[in-house]
Image (cartoon, rainbow, N blue to C red; front, side):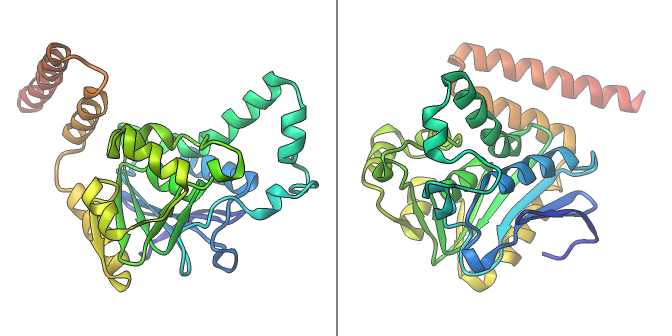
Length: 263
């Protein structure tokens, strides 16, 4: 996807903006877009740098894989330069450990803001942190060669980058547990069948499909999409009657806004 304006380009993350559509690209294909704390901070910065005109964000990875997960350097005793290693994190005070993980999680949270619709365009491997990053988005278009896997449990860890909540809501508790506990691959056909993927396309068509979906999402008025996204996002946690009330309130706001525009 081509863009007109480069807003950020650092630590394996590039943010470009083309009017109402922003593209966040993982730019380290030589390492299959492996992730690090520096990359997570750059992703957080990208979210904060989005202009107010942006309505749709497309997330993609350069090369053959979307993201192969956490860079293996994280599992060495020395870890990343200037960062605490995983072992150092485990030996530190509980409050510092919690704060550090919370900081890392910020890279994965802004994709579901109500004023945006985010699309992950996923090809090849999306492993561990890569899987969780794809799950951070509202929608996922995947290439027919996609391979999702949650490998944290096999390493003695848990998925902690916000991926468990959307995974359970998309595929259900039992399947989510099986995927995480076994660390097995989920391929394109299963991803589409279980709701992990909205659409499966040939790898050569992935960019075009993401561009087409982004354009389609811009067709409806922005405020109507924002209200609808908020309604759907809160539906699971509301009772039936609470959801009815939320629908009435949202529709009331829309009707008042439309009437006001005509007065």
